[in-house]
Length: 360
Image (tube, rainbow, N blue to C red; front, side, top):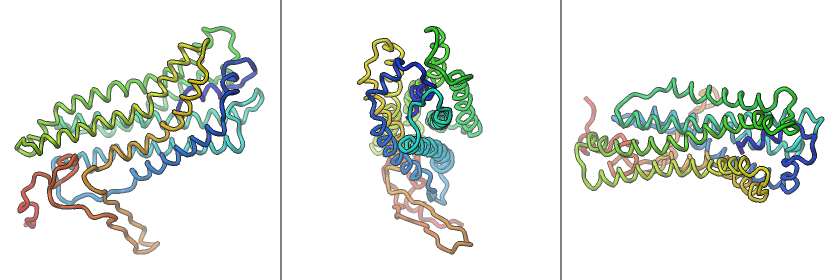
């Protein structure tokens, strides 16, 4: 999971009465690592499914710019970040099961280093997924407002901002001696540990707040955009708008389902530290071990085409052979009502005769 609590456990533990030690005495690390490995495996499959290349139609359409280039590109980079984060969770858990302890002892420098680096890797790429999720909502709003996207800004924001936040939080936590538990005063502990929590949870909370606002604003523009594109508003168009709004809602639900437990965990730790509900905290850790890596799986469900089975494209190098898989499934070319029309279907709204008319 991507949580600052794990990163504090990477510190050296010379004080055996520390609250972290008390929690770990009731924590089954083998079961936890097994859960992480299972959920991250499913997450890896979901990310790979999203990364696989799709076939696109040869006929241009106003809305295809989002589905084929803008939206598809954002989804692909989101899936890549999810894939790397899930792989980090899987490898870390596998090594913890076989070689390393989740909580390093006082003189175990190699375990401290491994724990810190693997946690930083996971945190960085999950932060990147949060920002790509936000970029998708921003780009949807721009598209419905008939404005061009900002891919360069998206990349800069998605890769640089997590690097700054991760470096800032973990540097304060670990430098100079990776001892964040044996601190002399409460104020020292706050200034040593709290920045890493803020660097993680502030970004997480911002996306939780901003994304629903953006999708709500996009929903208001949606009916106008559909009406202008199809030059009519009937029951078909109303149903189309409702279906796309449902997809907006499910996108937010998937994000909240994956990351709301992390926020609840952070709030409980900082408000009830001296009377910490240990069993509740451990339960939340198991929930996070399931939901965090499953983000890629949920994204594969909510970002996919809902109207028909997707077409994949697999091309092999000519030096290795002439094998080519051009289609896995057959799609329907006739126009019909779906959530991807007109957002994802290039022939939606075209008269049948026009769609079949050969180019001159």
